[in-house]
Length: 190
Image (cartoon, rainbow, N blue to C red; front, side, top):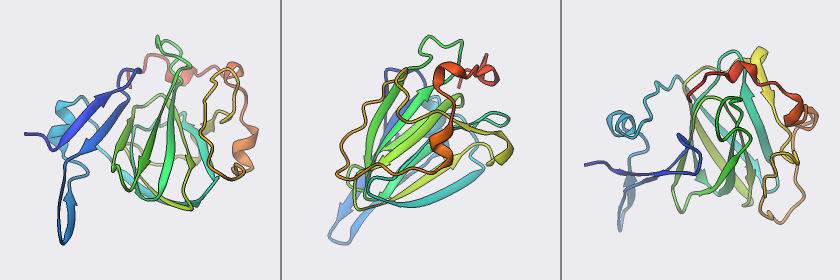
C-alpha cells in the first residue's frame, strides 16, 4: 500500500503529493520518496541532483527552466512556507501558458511534482523557508532560462507575503512569455 496520496492538478502530469506521516511523543517519520509508489503514479524519473535553498520572507525565486537539459522536479519545504508555481511552457500542450500553484510548508508536508517543459518558481511566505529540490537532470548554466514572475499573459495570482517581493537581478530581465518560442519544449510530454 502506498504511503502517498497523489493529487492530480488541473494540468496533467503536475501533481501534489501528500505523504503519510507517522507521529508519536518522540516526533514523526515519513517517506519523502519511494520509487515504486511514484512510478505507479506516473512519476517515473531518475533523480540525479538534489538541491536546497534558504530564503527569507518576500524572496521570489523563478520562474526558471532549462532549455538543453529540461528538468523534472520534486520539491518540498522542510522549514517555513512557500507558494510554489509551475507554468506549462510546452507549445503543443493544451494547457500551454496555464499555471498551477500550491502552498508547501513544514506543517502540511506536501510535495509538488513539476514535469519537464515547465517554468518553476516560488514565493517565500514565512520569515525563513528551506526548500528542497530533486531534479532528473543536472543544472546546466548554459541552458538556463526563465519567464517574468509577474508576466501579465500568464497572470499568476501570488499571495500577499507581508513584505516587498525581492528577486534576483537576472530574474527581472527575462523576455515576456509571448516573446519566447519555447521550441525546445515541443513534443515534450513531461
